[in-house]
Image 1: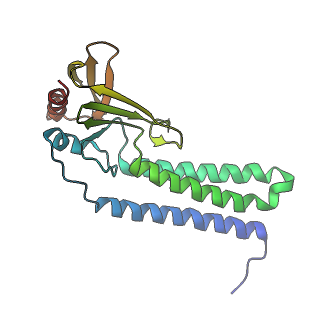
Image 2: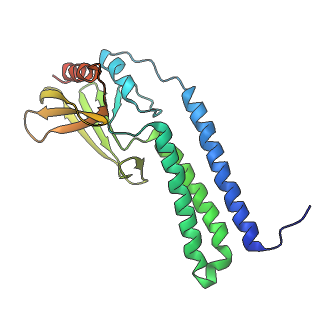
Image 3: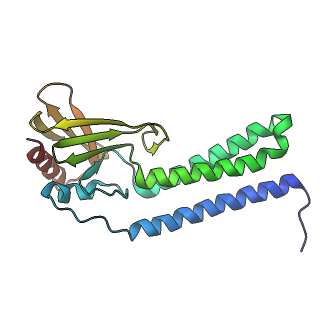
Amino acid sequence: MRIIEDPNTREALQFMALSVSVLVVIALVIGMADRWVPEAPSRAVDHVLMRYRAGYILREPGILVSGAWPRLVRLCFAGCTALIIGLGITLLLRLVTPLRDQAWRVGRWTLGAAAIWGVIAVLFLPPRSASAIPNGLRIIERPALFGQLSLPFPQEVVNWERGTIASIRTLEGGAFDTLRISPINGPDLDLLVPEDASGGNAFVAAALYDHLR
């Protein structure tokens, strides 16, 4: 067996091997997520919101995820983002003479860290979600890359109390329909849900209104 003596070639092959390993891990995570069974909902509104989780693994049942791409698309996006970050760091360090020898090693660690965070974000941290809490509605927003891949920065939480909602309407259009929540005072809140020609989104709007009135 021939041993690769050139350190650059060896480091590059190790980088490629790590990239393939990341893809394998992502495929395994998809399989595990498909077998995960969420907590059984106990309220009527929770039953309605269960279909709007966009493949996220969420502990609480009554959560609606707004405007998320399909899970497989998000995972591919996270994998490509991790690869770009890893290669970018590697190429940047290759241009810095004192750090040139460490470029591939640092790039591998960066790729691995970005991939791990990407999988966690894709499966557990929706950038924007609405939770039907007992006394109203809780909106959680996280900084996200292209509005899809949550970043490791603090989230913003806003609570809407019961009795403060004037109406909830369904607006059709594009790949997503809009659930427009209009409070008695203040600006409207728009939640994006997948298009449903059967009228299911009007049903979830009615369920949310019943919960909030």
